[in-house]
Image (cartoon, rainbow, N blue to C red; front, top):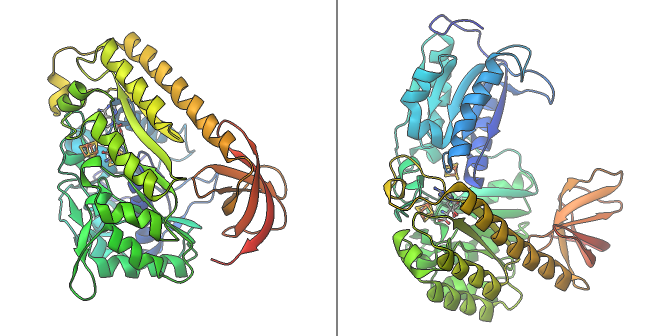
Length: 450
Ligand code: SAH
Ligand code: SF4
Ligand code: F3S
């Protein structure tokens, strides 16, 4: 490994490793496109890359600490034979950029989630031997500076809103992604069309708080997320629209109606609740009650009776008692989630909850997490079992392990698999014939046009 501060060879190949949420996946793809434009090629699988971008996540302690072990493995030759030039991007870069530069001398570049469009000029400096950090937060500049979309998987992500003003007391996102901004309507419709031309059949609209997206349509009329979804419904060749993640405080009537009216909008809603107890929700600064959340879901289910509901939970928030945790189990029984994500509370530096009294011991959190996950798992299996006998469309996203086997997603975001003479991106009408805990076996009937 050459010492930094002397010129380095210009990289010919790169690899981007993204951790964390779907927005990081989107950012990782955009960074790859920028590097492609610089004439740097993606490293083939199993081959060493000259430049490795670690696109990091800061949401929980384990995720954030991972980066130092990754850097260690890269420089000690455990991941690759030859040590690469290293760039650290993503939310850890934003939150701990200076510390990374101090702690990891082998890192050449630190670039925050709002600054990665300037990666090419940072790279030039790195090649000249200069270490560079850029964690500026210019709101829209990044998107304007990114190249056009060229290739896309059948299911693509599209960031429409970024940042968060909600300041839940446990969460780092408002600090790492900045204040809420909405990308302009026209840019989004254009990027969506570009994605479809590049091969996308499904687009998932992304935002830390996506239901807060707002803009003006081509006639200058104010529109919310539902208006954007209705515009994308008219994009020819696009078969499916999804959005994530929403906050219960920003769901309007139009979005609820859209679930009953827009054919391409899939019957799936990811709506995190975090806890089923009102005292805990208040301490989390969640601005909704458990009952308010349930009533909201009722309205969505009235608009779209077959809606699959998903959520996020945190167990062991400071001060959470056994009885308060029982309320979380109760909400799981009431909602009957098709899927849900649950986490042990992780104190994050700089957030109000990190210094609250009543930090819950790890064993208690472990026990609560296990009970919660077993309840969620029970409902997930029940949801899959209730889907047996349904006929639906499956969008093929990947090849299966066996020859002729294909993996795709049902409208309710279940993984489904079948065999036959098909191709990636095919939308196949199929009968769901068998339920497994985390997938469905399907019998293909015919390919349908997007
Ligand atoms: N903007 C989204 C998601 C943010 S992060 C939302 O508000 O729903 C994804 C999930 O990580 C959160 O929903 C929460 O369940 C979890 N999470 C966030 N901070 C956490 C922390 N400090 N400890 C444990 N889980 C956390
Ligand atoms: Fe974090 Fe809360 Fe914002 Fe979600 S709504 S990103 S949990 S602060
Ligand atoms: Fe992680 Fe940042 Fe996403 S902290 S969850 S990568 S917004």
